[in-house]
Image (cartoon, rainbow, N blue to C red; front, side, top):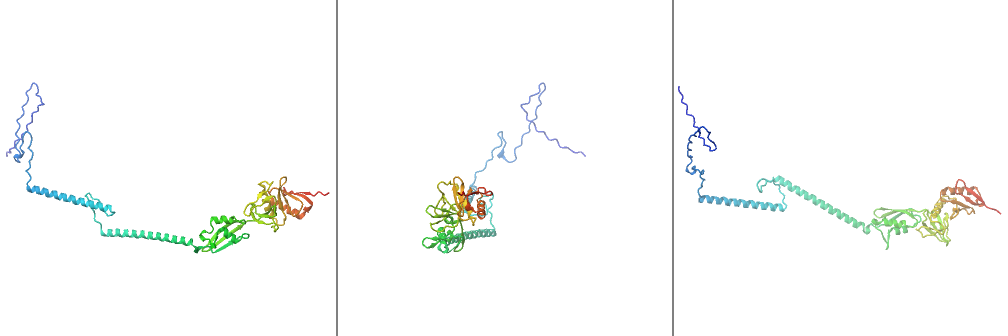
Length: 378
């Protein structure tokens, strides 16, 4: 059976190029003829020409198309106005402090609705926070009111001092202590409890002659306990007019004894100047300023020997610290205040074993080796 084959397709003709040059010596091949391009099948509006295809022309819009375009334009303007109103309302709500849960979506003014249960919980939480703030404010106001009432009551006459208990005051009268401490107010009143025992009261009481230290303790609502520590007298300073001052180890005058009145059995310091009670005595003429302390220290040591009476202490420019005791004519040379207690203990032992009335001088500069000088008899 014979089968007929279709003829081969024709090759498209190549456009001759002007750039090609014919080969010298041989004839240039001739190009096959180009087949004409068939016209397009969609009508005469797109005819081919040398300048290219003709532009597509649209028919002029009719009345319906213009009306439809106007309706679309009006809808777009109305939608834009609605969006603008929504944006202004949202901005006003934010400026007034409205806090709403929202989620920013790509579109303008988009919001996610909130579940009513979450809204109720949020409202209840805000109410509870307001209640807590109100309670704190009320508690603070109540505390301030109580503090003000307490302050007013403490500074009123309701809490004035009624009872004063004084401990340790043997030489100082209680009325003098109360007056110095300010407990007795001029006019017959009493000091307030809150003001009792101030620093000014302590300084005023310690300025009294016999008072060394003082402390105050309040027993509410109306009692004040005053504890006093008094000074210890160690010597007597004799004045030129016959009056005497009782002094302690620091030289502070505790009390003035007028002339003719009995004086306590204490060592007597000669050569010092008297002072008013509450002030310190001063060294007299011819006595160095530092030797008054030596005399006071020796007097304090002699006061601790009760059986040694009639001790008189003085300062000598040649012998230093000297003393007379028991009315004996012997001059006891002490030298300085070092080992004063041991020196007076040796003097007491010598007075009990040897007749000191037969000696003119007893040298106790070295307490372990006393030297006695007998009287020169004619």
